[in-house]
Amino acid sequence: MKPYIAIQTEDVEIDALVRAAKVPGAGAVVVFDGVVRDDGIDRMDLETYESVALELMDGIAREGIARFNLLSVAIVHRIGALDVGENILLVVASAGHRKEAFEGAIAMIDELKARVPIWKKEHLRGGGTVWVEGNAEGFPRGPGPSV
Amino acid sequence: MNVTIRFFAQFRELFGPVHELSVPEGRRLTEVLHEIAEPNPDGKTALFSPDGRLRDYVIVMQGSERIEHDRAAALELRDGNTIAVFPPVAGG
Image (cartoon, rainbow over all chains, first blue to last red; front, side):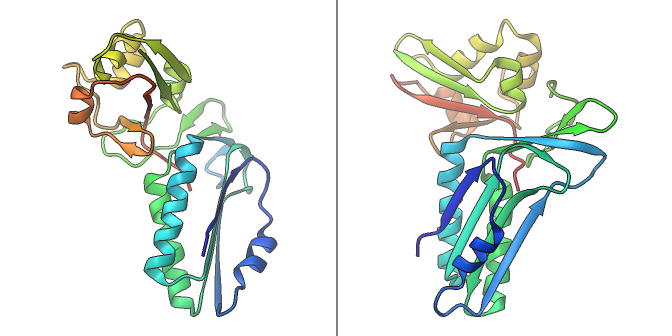
């Protein structure tokens, strides 16, 4: 089964992803909707290395399908300027039973956060910007553009 | 030969998004990165430690393959190579 993978600026049609996940044999559909959290920010900007990100997302989805017997997977990541509360990442996974669907969704989200080249820059309510700390020891935080 | 170095996130802000360079055959990746960073003190500090090695948090990719720092130091670029340099990822 071919996963649905997308990186886009526009919002995500979650209902359509859920409908598409209800394939024959599916008894559980898990939806993860990651949203912009209000950590004292007005908005965040997301950027990506799109060609590589799409390739890695596709690999993560195919690995999830094989490892957790998933019946369908959709991963949609948004980029651009997003306000607090907006959707950032949708992962929709279906399986015969809930355990595989939940575990598969969690594993794919963890992999995505660790490996896919996407970055977030937060615009603080009090002014200034800060890049969200990524996954690497020793990486200093600080206001952009300094690192 | 021609090579392309792409920078993302903090490194894009420091160096610009793309450097399309004409370099001599056999030029090593880290030599090219040093040349880009040299006129940019903030960028140089962000990319390299004082001993001239890439900082631990710097990620280098050729296509979708990550290049470990030891290999990056020895990697001879080839015509048409595209290398991406970026900080740790933070998607999701």
